[in-house]
Amino acid sequence: MRNLNNNNQSSDTVQDKARSLMVNKQRAAKNRQQTVFSRSAAEIGLNDEIGQ
Image (tube, rainbow, N blue to C red; front, side, top):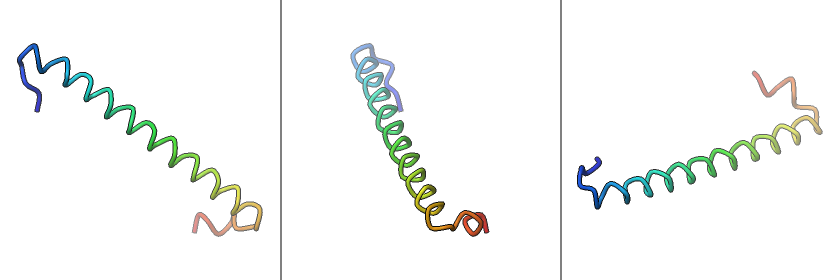
């Protein structure tokens, strides 16, 4: 919950930015991992079985 004081407002903005950066980093890492898994599955011929 955000405080309405001017002093805390700027720290909330920094916290929001930090949270957003962390979420984006985690999402990018998950996407990279999924890409690696998909490529590995394709190499060993599991493409047809992945969707099932």
